Length: 163
Image (cartoon, rainbow, N blue to C red; front, side, top):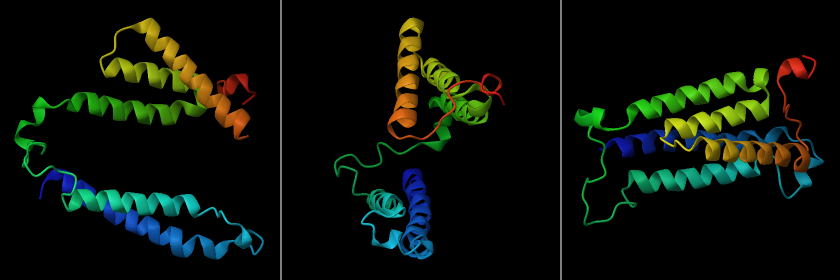
């Protein structure tokens, strides 16, 4: 079995466990007043689990591949150096750094740096455009989460917020 099918199989197993938790364990602890609501806290996890199970099953069963191209898109592990593994590892490291720096730097600074450096890692070299897009994206996401959804997200570094 190809690597993409093995990864889809692992995702399938995780999603089956996630779906089981969403369907059978999350709803049992709801207070009676919330059980009359048409949308429960487990509604979105249920949709995610079903969708992910369907997509991963399609990959495991090979339904996404066209019949005329056999194994053309499989990853050749003997030629792993030909792929952009360094870029992928740098992006993963950047994601970890983003998660660790989110509170100390604040949402706006950490997100701006993540988007700017991520586009740099992927090969973009128009720095002014990168800065403008990263700034607009960070500001819009912060505004939507903070003002529209009403979820407080510290926009500034911790030392500027009093702790």
